[in-house]
Length: 140
Image 1 (cartoon, one colour):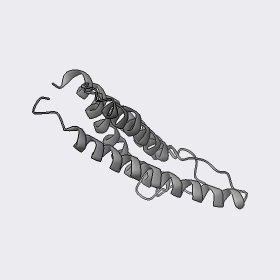
Image 2 (image 1 turned 90 degrees about the horizontal axis):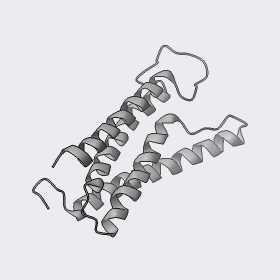
Image 3 (image 1 turned 60 degrees about the horizontal axis):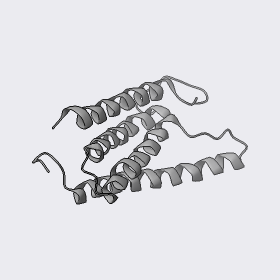
């Protein structure tokens, strides 16, 4: 292990925190959407929430699972970095979805995705891919 590598316990802690946050928010979203369904409203999973879904799955399958098999690849560290970027993007995307930070001048029903939400999700998804690729391939 080089001096720049995180130890497996630290990686597991990071991934567990991100995954737990993602699952908790997903349960909140499902509860809200079930309430909307009971009111005969359209139900959907906002684009912003997909950042959390993917961050959770990345942590479970590309951080925790490789650590269980004690791999020596850089994938767990790269995946933890990418998932962190996705969770960071979620904050801005959900604010865009609810027109709290972006789109305050928009009126009427919300769309999935809201224009600002779409931009944020796409930008942070791209940044997560860049972080993953940079860590997995280039940083030693």
